[in-house]
Length: 138
Ligand code: HEC
Image 1 (cartoon, helix red, strand yellow):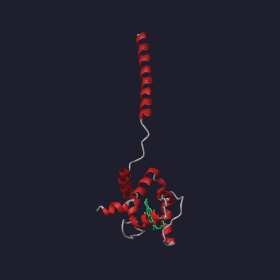
Image 2 (image 1 turned 180 degrees about the vertical axis):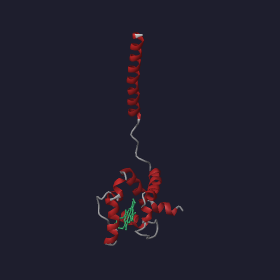
Image 3 (image 1 turned 60 degrees about the vertical axis):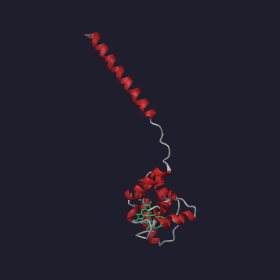
Image 4 (image 1 turned 135 degrees about the vertical axis):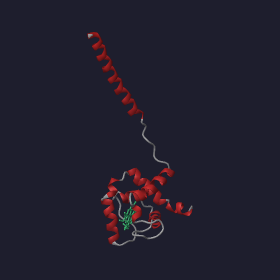
C-alpha cells in the first residue's frame, strides 16, 4: 500500500511538473503579431470609427456636428500632420475651427480616447487618411 501511495505521489508530482512545461512552451510559442496590413487597418479603422462613436459627430463628406473626415484628411495631408499624435494629445488641432469646437474634441482626447490602444488609433488614422479612395470607389 505504501509503495502504491508513493508511486501515486511521484506520478502526481511528475504530471504537475510536465503541465508547467506545456504551459511554458505554449506561452513561448505565441509569436509577436506582425503589424496589421494596410487592408486590415482600413477595415479595422472603418469599424472603430463607428464603434468608438466618432461617427456621431464626424460624417465622411459633409459637416455634421464636426468637420467631415474628408476635410480633416485634406488639411492633415497638406500639413503632413499626424492624426495619431493629435488623438493622443501630443499635437495641437490644426483645422480652422472655433474654440468651442476645439473644446468638444479636446474633451474626447482627455476622456474616452485614452482607452483606445495605439494599434487602434493607428488603424483609425489610416482609415481617415485614405477615406477619399474609399468614397471614390462607391
Ligand atoms: C462629440 C463630438 C465628437 C466626437 C464623438 C468625435 N469628434 Fe473629432 N472633432 C469634433 C469637433 C467639434 C472637431 C473640431 C475641433 C478641432 O478641430 O479640434 C473635431 C476634430 C477632429 C480632428 C481634427 C483636429 C484638428 O487638427 O483640428 C480629428 C482628427 C478628429 N476629430 C478625430 C476624431 C476621432 C478619431 C473620433 C473618434 C475616436 C472623434 N474625432 C470623435 C467632435 C467630435
